Image 1 (tube, rainbow, N blue to C red):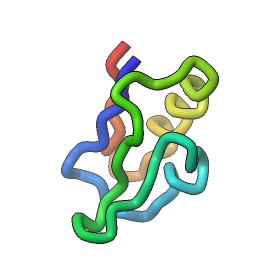
Image 2 (cartoon, rainbow, N blue to C red; image 1 turned 180 degrees about the vertical axis):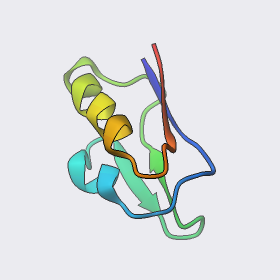
Image 3 (spheres, rainbow, N blue to C red; image 1 turned 90 degrees about the vertical axis):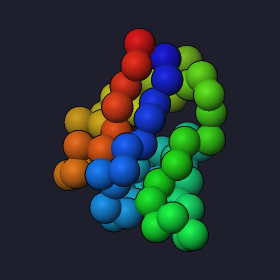
Image 4 (cartoon, rainbow, N blue to C red; image 1 turned 135 degrees about the horizontal axis):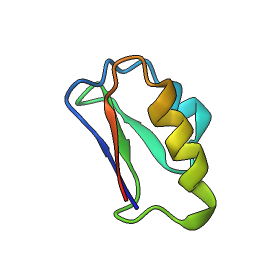
Length: 63
């Protein structure tokens, strides 16, 4: 599974707070980024939750 943060990211950092193991905030771009190319199994569910809760619909899940 891959996770992509699109340009729609508003930088509210909800995903960073929800799963700091996967998401980090890029101060230069003022948006969240993903730390992994492939999401480790133990973080897949929380990534799906982050995508569902993203107010900007900026997190895409590619299975």
